[in-house]
Length: 320
Image (cartoon, rainbow, N blue to C red):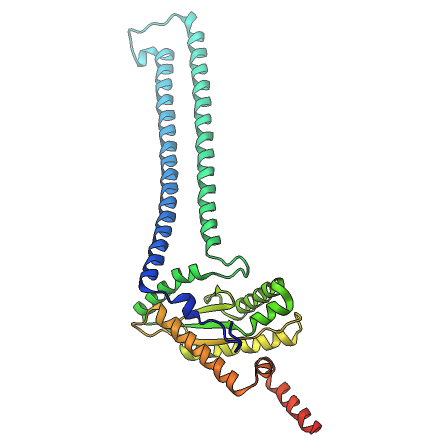
């Protein structure tokens, strides 16, 4: 980060040249197509197993009918063939043969059924592993919130939904203040814990219908569907108060501090335009605050509540 404390704009991380953007979109589409094809193949195999079940039961029913007919022919020959005569001495042997045939057939059916069940269980495991792998690929391993790849999936869908229904769609971009200093003072492990604490606070503050993402580095994004600009501003203010309470509770040796920018989707805008708008709003607020307050006081001003500020001003007057 530059010495001013302002991080590299999100635009440098997200806004690419048209050719690069097309390449990323093509790779993303290919990944989705491969995942979809894998799921389709598994479902086809499951359907084939169901068809195999029906085949086994059909064979079983046919064999039962044939055996029943044969038994009827020998036991009550007059019902089948009036001219058929069987030596009574061979009847026990015929029955034993039929019983052996039935036993062998049932062993075959049971073995085939077990094989079908094993194959079905394996396919279901593969399906669950595929779904888990996809979910893992969309989640940031450090913070446990969604990552940029998921943003590339869900944000266009939310824009399309808002465009079709005419509903509101807003987002909040967050940039951690002085994260380089946090890493310097507490080390990279401390910096990682700092980001985890930020993510936990964001998940606690925002609604279940909102989507919290980590864009990368020390930048986060919250997508708020069906939320107007005024409501998004209030949500950002609520986050500010939650941050102050977290810091006052003394959960860690450091205090959380970040700047935010709000933007609302307007019909005809694309993802890049909405992100740019929120990004510019965030840096406008950050620059204004840096310009009106010394860097050391800026962070403290953002964290303390109005009551604490008044107490500090009163103490300064007493000292004077």
